[in-house]
Amino acid sequence: MDAFTDIRLAGVSYAFGTQTVLNQIDLRIPAGTVVALLGPSGCGKSTLLRLLAGLTRPASGTITFGERLVADAGWAMPPEQRDIGMVFQDYALWPHMTVEQNVAFPLKMRRVPRAERDARVARALDRVGLSAFAGRKPAGLSGGQQQRVALARAIVAEPRVLLFDEPLSNLDSELRDALCRDMATLLRQLGITAVYVTHDRREAEILADCIVHLSAGRVDAVRSVTSSSGETA
Ligand SMILES: Nc1ncnc2c1ncn2[C@@H]1O[C@H](COP(=O)(O)OP(=O)(O)OP(=O)(O)O)[C@@H](O)[C@H]1O
Ligand SMILES: [Mg+2]
Image (cartoon, rainbow, N blue to C red; front, side):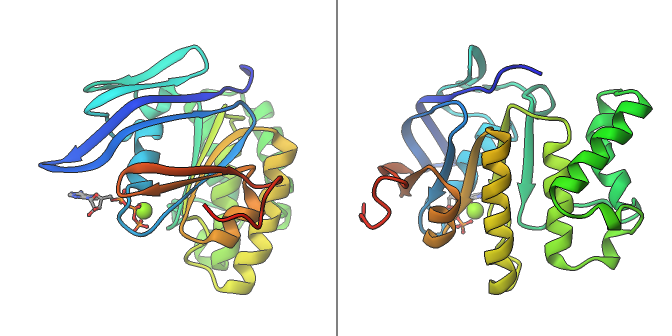
């Protein structure tokens, strides 16, 4: 596995037709930092995450992961080449596969040998507290459990970057809190660079080292969480 990586965006803009959605974003996320992207609905959080994932390409600017250029104007390295793990709001599990098969999928794609695959899947399920559910199908799990499966699938290939888009927003508040704290612990253990989109300030403060406020497609403010959790932007 490569070393963890920093993420740099320089002058990144994006438009849907004539509507500018991201306007000259400059941002550096140091290796191993968990950043929360916070901001009101429609401010461009998911668009920025999709650019980091390689699901879409910038109109201008560059995105680099470590030494690797992953996007510039009109060009994007495909997601599967970026060494990333992703967790979305709707879990996106394959219903016909068991928990174990869902989590094993990224390793199968990478042609990891069977024995190593089994060991890594077992380790990822253990990390998210789902070892006992390996043989179940997603339909037999609660929302919180399904999201833990998605989390295990995102980390099983030991990516360099983890990307989250409101992963807890479909869960009830009690569950959200518990899973949020578990994810915070897990991210610290992994020491991985992560970008976590949310519009929940509390979630951002629990999880992140640093909160980036987006407003109307621009970076409005950046603040460190540990040093000043009471400060407003
Ligand atoms: N497929 C699309 N076609 C046209 N406009 C779009 C499309 N997707 C998003 N937009 C617009 O781009 C802007 C940013 O959308 P984005 O999804 O990035 O916002 P967001 O910050 O993630 O919002 P939310 O908190 O509601 O998820 C919005 O104004 C939205 O209307
Ligand atoms: Mg969004």
